[in-house]
Image 1 (tube, rainbow, N blue to C red):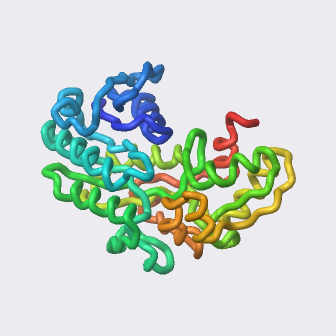
Image 2: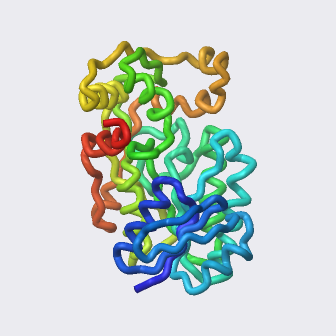
Image 3: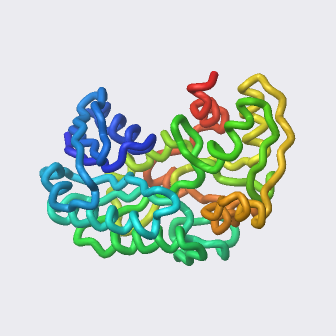
Length: 296
């Protein structure tokens, strides 16, 4: 059995630690605010990911470090780089492989058709630029690195555009205002599938220094809302979309630059992950049911 360090205690970090522990590995789960954890073979240790020395001390003997930490959405350009640098340096200090949890922002608004993990990164937003630089720093590390890229999350505890903008209104059957084209197909990623892909990537026997896409399901935002309402035993309420001017007027500035993700189809090719890592996406119904776990 191996030893792993998981940095970040959000839904994906917790599930990644749980899966590794259930497989019999020794796991250190760490964040600045980590509390007690009741997971098999998982030990919670408080640490600041920006402190490479401290992180290296708790990572001694680790085969791999999973970078699952998040920064506040409006502070990515400020907070993410010190986190990434701390995790990367710690992995180098203990000679551990580095598995980075990323997303699709780096491909930018000009990418056409299905997104493949071998496409060049061409960010058109600040957040996409941040993600691209983070991956470049991981690639430049003195240890092997892999990035696992996901689309918009569904799943228990996930904080996403859907959970913030749509879910509260759907729970009360009130009118919903969302983003973009409500009928454009969009890739939705289950948090538990993200964790399964991260774990599988840690054992990848091929050449590292590459990315994998988390297997996802495609459905329009309206379809997701319809299925969510049906699971809640409610009728789909009226659904409309924000304009950019409305988002700015409401102080939703962080959403404006990323709204392109919902304005046209967002399609993800994860065939390489399915073939090389042996993972596949669970159904949309399973994803939504888990999202609603605390509500039904």
